[in-house]
Image (cartoon, rainbow, N blue to C red; front, top):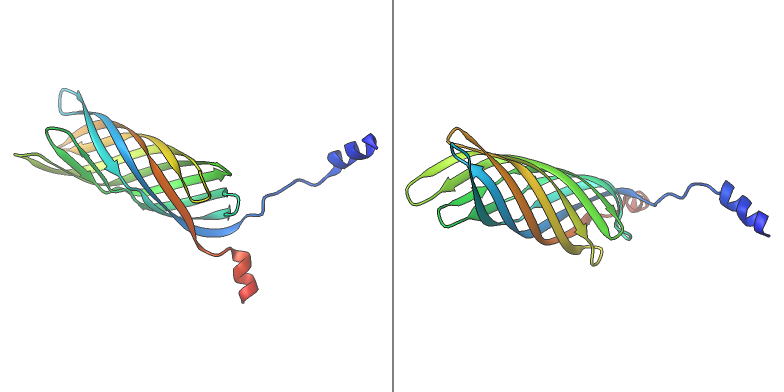
Length: 186
């Protein structure tokens, strides 16, 4: 009997997840700690903030088990403040994500406009960043997330490096039923 089990395990076909075309969205809300340099000579500052990435994704996915890979795109409105100024940005975001049951990983990049103001001065510039997010799913849609991202802001002709840490909640859901259901309906 042992030889039969060994033969079955050695000759069994490869197991594959049942994934199909899916479309969905992610909405996150997170508090942020931003460490960055600014001006000439470079001086490091700390800012606190809030971000709310909103992305739409498309990929091969199994929503029952939160298993699959996808590409996404959207906006990441962010606001930061300290005792001297407020900084508001709206980068366009592109991401590549993979979920493996309870853990989700995303790598992303963003580029967009930046507005900074204080009591006496306003500046318009550009922000660019790249980062990674890890999400632990409490259920198939909701879970805490932790992100780290680095990049730079360009304001008043100066390049200001940034490093940002985020902790928050992320909600994900699919918009469209699986492709196989679409095929059955037609």
